[in-house]
Image (cartoon, rainbow, N blue to C red; front, side, top):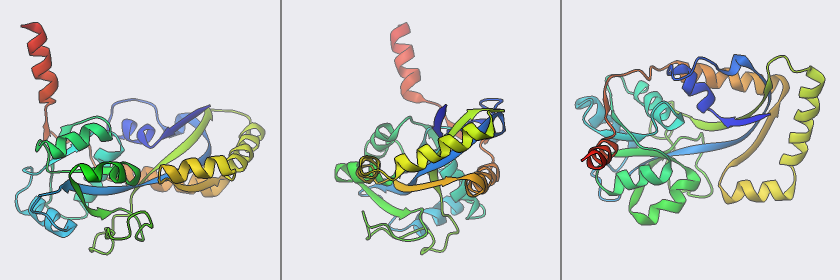
Length: 243
């Protein structure tokens, strides 16, 4: 059994791998991480509108830190598609800690974080422009949603459980029931709350509809843009080692 977030979809959509959701048997969708669009604390951009206007008026200038072809990268691409003519210049950064460092170090202008990551990092010098949820979140009610600022951008990284393709439906249904029961336990609810992860759980046709929706959203944009900065720190390290 495999548990993986939407990287399974984005990796296929970007051409990194040849397999995708259709090569597995979906069991359930659990947990949803809303994304926060953030900038450095002293950034001139005060709202998402300011940021997207600059990305439209001077495309491929603002640097967006992302793990390329992963969900955060697609968050930026989908956000671009909501502002015709806007374009970020993407630079390869790994997990949230690396993207945080890129922002506070002045190597990137903007990035996206899960709400849990943002809460952990904001004291270090980053500021939120928007959260990609339909409504403001209790953990940070002061952060305006993307919808409030005029963007049809409700985007969250979901987790899906998978069996090998062709697994007997009775086994799929049984494990879906087990996952539902586990998600309702106090232990799991507390763990999700600590990570500020929305504790949803979907199975059956509802889960499949959600999966189709996420696949369509991700495939609606193209991640093969040539406007990507090289991983400069990595090249410097390699050159140093070679020397």
